[in-house]
Image (cartoon, rainbow, N blue to C red; front, side):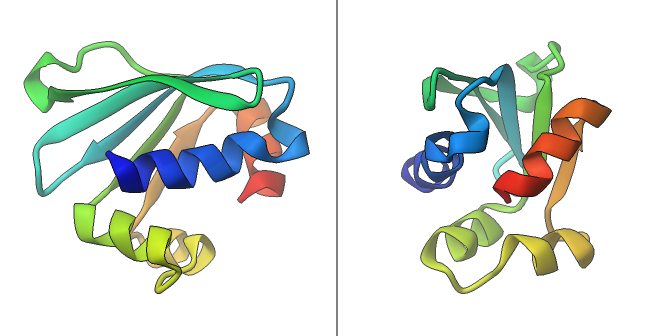
Length: 105
């Protein structure tokens, strides 16, 4: 949870994220859990973990990765671009959000 708060907090603090108000989720495949929250007013709020089988609602911005990759991203041992290009990290969002996230990531 701390690693996810670090990555999402950095993303939320960027000027391009100031106008966003979107639901977020990060599915951690090896833990079979999904962490949900909200990106609003330059912060990430209401982070909570739930088992995958309880996670029915689709978030506006969805990440999927293993927990080891999340920690590596947080520690700077893995860049988001190379992780995404290699398929280690998946990102799903609407077209407008994808364009805006491109500048944030």
